[in-house]
Length: 113
Image (cartoon, rainbow, N blue to C red; front, top):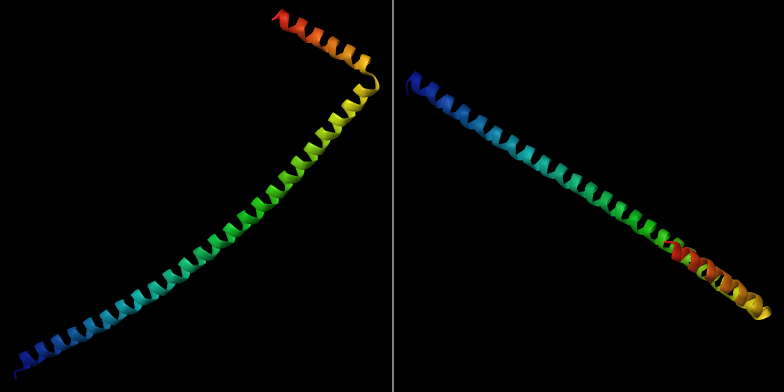
């Protein structure tokens, strides 16, 4: 083998080694990127689950509060109704006159329009 052929063969072998090293580096980089991507996906999934849990807790809290407010309002309306009914039963003439007066005022206001 001549000197030129030997240099060519050495260059080819060196290029093959370089390509092999580059291939290994690319595979290693792809594997690392894949691991980091999977880790990022897990973090995003975990954060989403945390947010979903927080939203569920807040919804439950608001729902409970709304139910309590509704119940208190219903109780207050029932108490007001019972109080008005007792007053009417105690003094029906007075209640009738008040209702007639209120009706008259509303009628006059309605007529003005």
